[in-house]
Each structure stands twice: as structure tokens, then as C-alpha cells.
Length: 211
Image (cartoon, rainbow, N blue to C red; front, side):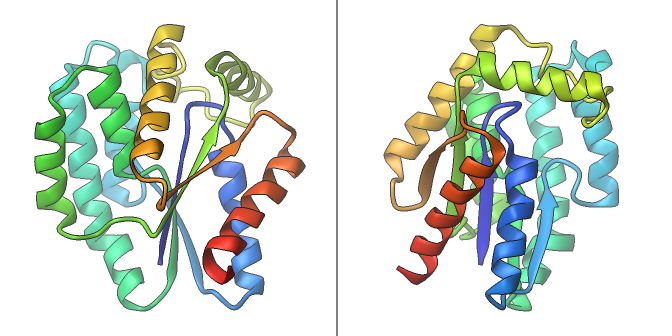
């Protein structure tokens, strides 16, 4: 099973994925937590380029293909092998992030993005996608707070440095995708505190898996 977690900066994906892993482990699932970009050693090097604010001049097409390269390596080394072993893969961002960030927000051709994804992913799609939704100004405030207090990596701030309108476009893109695939996407309000969001996410996962 593949469960992906999506959302803008500061939405709590990295925190909530750990809560879900703990819950599923208690239910007998063998869970693997991973992320994009950076789920492999090669991916970590790609991540260091993509998230470094010094890379602000990167061309959107180059940015897209770096994400595609990271995803291809990630699928080969982590996702597909784990799924073949019947493990539950919990991934912090996946192909939907590319659609909204590089497609909706950067303006790249969506058909190009989908064509590359069809080649890389084949028929693989997440079983469940948890979209942690909140206004960008709240998410960015949380993200910068974590950066300043040292709980978040300070040199991975290229996207946090984008203008508010960029993040608003990303959010609206996610909500549009969720509207197109309501069976896969489960939108959770990420505004409340961590515990409340955790409870809501667990309820969603529990309902999806066991009714």
C-alpha cells in the first residue's frame, strides 16, 4: 500500500506521517517512511540543489526534470521494492507535488508532466493521498518559526522564499486535484494544533482501510 502526504510548506506532513506510521504499526502494518525529494542517496544530492535558496535561478524545466530524476531513483530503490514486499509505504510528497508546484505554480505544460510521469510511474498511483490544507500565511509562519528555532533545516528554504501568491497557487492546485480525485484524496484541515490534526488524519486513514 502506498499512502502519500501532500500540502504546502508548514502544513505538518513530516510530523503527521510519523503519527500515521505509529498507528499503522500498532495495527500490524510494516511501514516505511520516505520522502521526495531525497529518499535515496542520489536523491539527497538532488534535494540539496532543489531546496537550496542559492538555486533560485534554476529554470522551471530543469527543476522539473530534477524532480523526475529523483522520483525515478526513488521508485527503483525504495518504493517499488517495499511494495513488492507488501510493506506500507508512507511518502512525504509524491507526483502530485510536481503537478501543482511545477505545473500550476511554475506554469509548465501539464501534459508534459503527465507524460513523463506515465513513463516513470507506469501504473503506480497512491492508494490514499492525505492533503493537509491550510492558508499559506499560516503555513509559512509555522515553517519560518521552525527554521528559526532549529527544528527545520535552515538551508532548505528556496520554496519558503517564494512570494505568497506562489503558495496560494500551489494550495489552489492541490484543492483542484483533490476535487478531481475525491476517492484518492482526503483533505484534512491542518489549521488546528498537532494533536487535533493527528486525530483527524488517523480517523481518515482508519476509515479508508477498515470502514
